[in-house]
Image 1: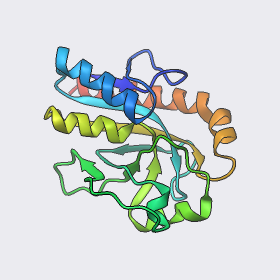
Image 2 (image 1 turned 90 degrees about the horizontal axis):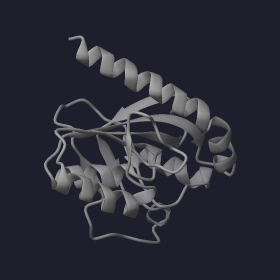
Image 3 (image 1 turned 180 degrees about the horizontal axis):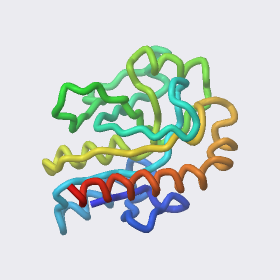
Image 4 (image 1 turned 30 degrees about the vertical axis):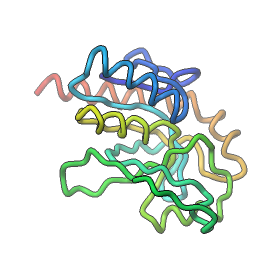
Length: 180
C-alpha cells in the first residue's frame, strides 16, 4: 500500500492518511485494522537539515521524533523516539518527525551530529504503526526546503516540482519491481 499525507500533498497512486503525527497515526491505524497491507510505502516531501539538496530523492526506513527543545537540553523523553523497519546493515538517513516545521538553522545543524538528515511531519507515525502491526515499511521523500527562516516559502515554491519528481521516482520503481 502506498500512502501520503494528504491536503495539498496527494498522489494519484497513494492513499492520504492525514497531516502530522496524530492524523497519520489515527487514520493509518484504521486502515491497517480493516485491510492490513503487506507493505507500507510513504511518499512525501521533506526539509533538509543541510546535507541533502533541494529536489534530492531520499529513501529511508528509519524515523525519529526529536523536538528542538531536546537539542538545547530543555527537554527529555522517557519514550523510545527512534523506530526502524530496516532489517539490513545498510545505513539509513534518519527522518525526524514533529508537528512543527523547523526554522532555526543553527540549532538544526545539531540534528546532523545525531545522524538525523531530514524532517517530514508524518514518517515517525507511519513507521510506528507499521511496527505495531508487524508490516514492513519505508518512505520516499523529495527535499523541498532547508530548515531555516525561509522554510515555508521555499516549500511552497518547490512543492509542485517535488511532487512531480516523487511521482516519476515511485512509478519508475514500481515498473522496475513489476518487470523482474
